[in-house]
Length: 156
Image 1 (spheres, rainbow, N blue to C red):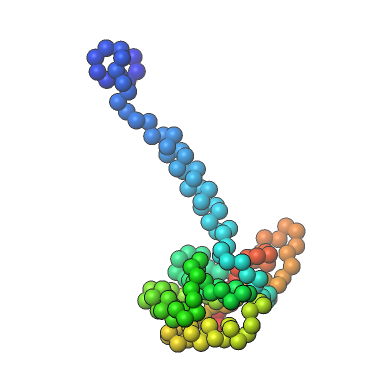
Image 2 (image 1 turned 135 degrees about the horizontal axis):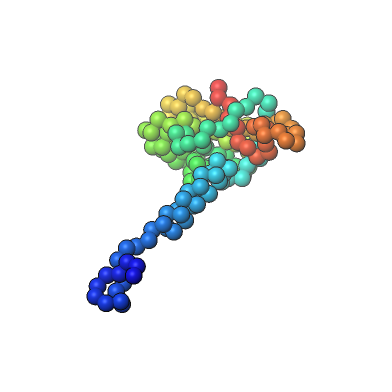
């Protein structure tokens, strides 16, 4: 009668059935794999629009420096005071040899963006990608990169 351990009919099952656990883990894995590319950067900025763009690369080989309309600066999702920007850039970008992308709200004053770019240049970062939104209008049935809100990058 079944898989029983011990003496008599009141023994307990000795094997743990992991099939339901594996099924749940695989479903969760699929959900995360599908939703991860759809995630955008956490800070809310209104990006400038341009025609010549390509999609921001996926993966962890880059960092995004976000400048909000109110002057808030974020390195990925972490708030960084302007005074500490060079230290954070040295530790996270230069030391780890990661590509840096600048993502500034279109209403941020030009002088603020130039000031931040000066800090980036001061730590020795020579290549800087600029994040923008595609200005092309999406037509029905078109799955191109002109989707509203999709971050795109333009390298110098």
